Image (cartoon, rainbow, N blue to C red):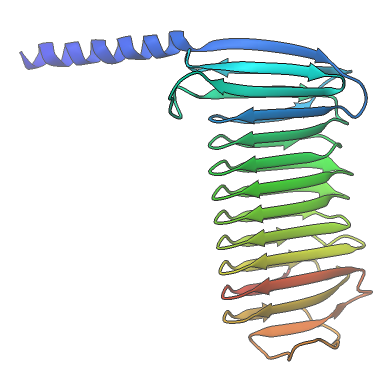
Length: 281
């Protein structure tokens, strides 16, 4: 009897899996655009991945995980809008759509998802990524604006060159590796901020967290003007800095300021209660 029950249970699992798999539908949409096109993808549940394609084509591949969601798509001139349209009350499984999108490298892209991974790479148009629980990955972006807004998802930026970077996060950790440009600004409420790079040849870098720790790592030949302060947290510095005047009292362990080499870039590190560490790499 027990063997029969186990056999029945296994059969039911296999049947459920087969039904779920059969409910998945793969669709492809193609659009022809001109230079500096604008592409917008909004997805309630599921990941979005955007990479550069060839020529003037926007190619959208969507995998729908049930018949309770459909893909709306419109083109108006040089703008393409893609939207996951929920047909009924759904959850993260039945409402999920997986997007893979290729766009011209100079396109400006905006992507939004509540739960799925947001991934962009290889572009040199502006990129905006928004999510609540969604993790964010951006890599190999040059000469563009990168705007990230998330609640609790983690943020990872890699190899962003000459970028205008703005990241706002509530609870997710933010990691920046080889990120430089005229403006690099990160604001977090409780997440940790980790920067590893050289602060570029010029620019303004502002890393701020209310209660999360901030760690910035740079080589000995980096050139920057730095101010670091934590109201209630500990502050550490590995560099031998030339002193500078500040609007606040510099106290060992809670604040420091100074210049390194030619002070090409401005670096501001601030936390209310988190720890700050400027590390020598």
